[in-house]
Image (cartoon, rainbow, N blue to C red; front, side, top):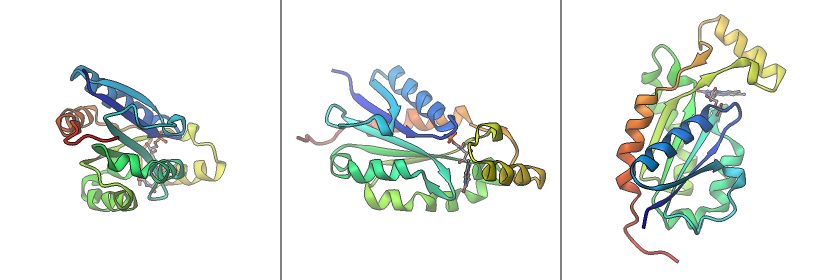
Amino acid sequence: MSQKILVTYASRTGATMGVAEEIGKIFTENGAQATVCPMTEVADLTPYDAVVAGSAIQNRQWLPEAVQFLQKHQVELGKRPFATFTVCMTLAMRNGETYRPSVSEWVAPVRKLVQPVSEGLFAGVLDISKIPAMGDRLKFRLSVIFGVWSEGDHRDWEAIRTWANELYPQLIPTHTYG
Ligand SMILES: Cc1cc2nc3c(=O)[nH]c(=O)nc-3n(C[C@H](O)[C@H](O)[C@H](O)COP(=O)(O)O)c2cc1C
């Protein structure tokens, strides 16, 4: 029987959703039955053999609904292979790779709740027109003017696919659960 994997995400402007869909596609290509959906729509983890959860970063943190998802399902997540991915703009900066350790630190609260087998860290998208709050839009316009971040889709699909392909064998459960 094929492996049932949940790929669940918290996304505000769609970038993390796109990453989740790509990861789900890779698992399907590997022969798994992948379900991709927002964390807010997940009621029960018992149908799944493994879970991959990803969030966009806002203000150096996972989104609140993503943290709530982990808190709510902490016990069930601990019984299955679990991995995380994080999507942010810092990794899209000119010298973004040098910030990888800092970005990894933003995931520390997640690690405290459930220990992942792997953590993907990916550059995201800056589409200012999709940011709902006017104050945030202004802040991002200024950061673009000052050259901190640049607008556009910075997702590295090759890096995302490589991570998902390498992750897949780690999602095979090593124990039974009930
Ligand atoms: C209000 C707001 C705050 C953000 N804060 C950060 C941040 O602290 N660090 C960072 O690297 N990116 C930050 N970002 C950039 C997002 O993480 C990035 O645009 C991501 O691709 C958004 O993913 P989503 O489309 O799935 O919501 C922020 C974006 C917004 C709208």
